[in-house]
Structures are given as C-alpha cells and as structure tokens.
Amino acid sequence: MLTGLLLLAMQTTDFQRTELPDGYDRITSATYQIDVPRGWKVSPETNFGQRKAYGPEGGNLGVMTAPPSNQDWDQLYRTALFFVLREKKGTASPYEVKKVKVANGEELEACVFGVKNEAGFEDRRYVMIKHPTQGLLALSVEIPNREVAKDWEKHFQRMGSSARFLGSSR
Image 1 (cartoon, rainbow, N blue to C red):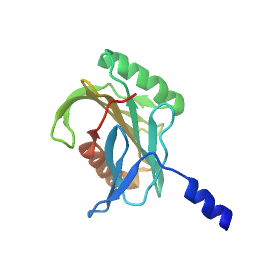
Image 2: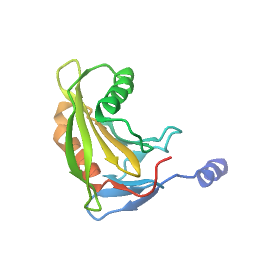
Image 3: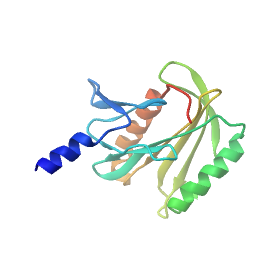
C-alpha cells in the first residue's frame, strides 16, 4: 500500500483539471484548453502532441497539437487521413472548410470531416483548427455506438466551443 501511495505521489500530470459547475472539467495544458465530461480519464500528452479523454462506454475525445505551418488544407487533410485510416479503416468524407468560434471569441478557419465505419455510421469526426501564429489544434471524437451518438456529439461540440490556444505549439 505504501508503494502505491508513493507511486501516486510521484505521478505528475502535464495538465491542470478544473471542475466546472455544469458537469464538465476544464483541461488546461501549456498550449491549449478544452472541456471534457467530468471524471473522464485523461491521458498524458504523447511526444507527438496527442492526448485522449476516455468515456465510460468506450470511445474517446482526442486533441492533438502541431506547430504553425504553410501547409494548405488539402495537404493537412491528406496527412491526417494517413494516420486516421492507418489506426482504423473506414470511409472518409470530403473535408469542408469553415470558420469556428473558439473560447476567447476568436473566429478561426477549420477543416471538418468524418469517417464512416463498415456499417455506414460516421463514428469518427475531426475538426482541425488553424491559428495563424500558434499552430494547429486537431480535435476528434470516436463515438462508441449509435445509441450514445447524441451525447457524444454534445461532448464533441462542447470540446470545440471551449477550445482555446494558450501558447505556441512546439
């Protein structure tokens, strides 16, 4: 038991979790902030800038950062699809470029697309938000099944509307 307590005390997180009054937790890292449902397990950030929040039914909300680049949306979409489809097969939708409002009220350009599974259900969705000086914030959701899709869509929308760039990404 003492060993377990020592290990727990030695664990460090690379983010701060703040409980919000509406059932969500604010996750604040060095470079961004997002909201996720209260109590979900949040992973540390990987060496390549990825973090996931895991829901109780399976599935996850994901966030990944990238430094500023001169790549256009076609290049970013093709690069994202390479990794997305390598992780799990599916049929990707064409991307759509739109303006999204982030938490500080700023409207930024974003690339939005989804991937359907073999049953034809779009169980994965992606929003890549590009900031002119702070890089890219790629948000994703992997919905575990159709029955919980509405709740997960609500969580994904909340993550997107709460997203905020805080510092430069790598």
